Length: 59
Image 1 (tube, helix red, strand yellow):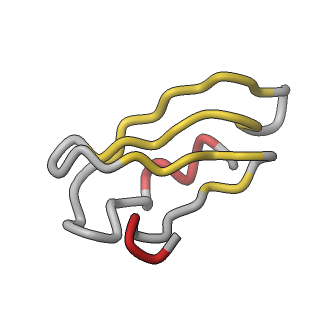
Image 2 (cartoon, rainbow, N blue to C red):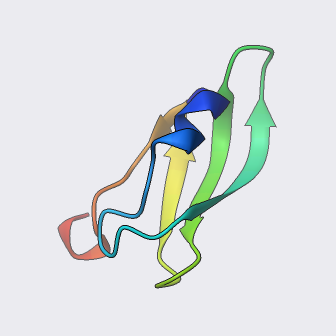
């Protein structure tokens, strides 16, 4: 996932802002980490550079 996506991503549940936590990245993108909604406290994992933005009930 590219850092520039943070400007357009929002929580799919409540449309709140997402907070990024990076566990691993290379010079081009974030490979592993987490996106957390500051409003509803839902976590969305980033695995192999792909954020999983499915609501928790759909995973």
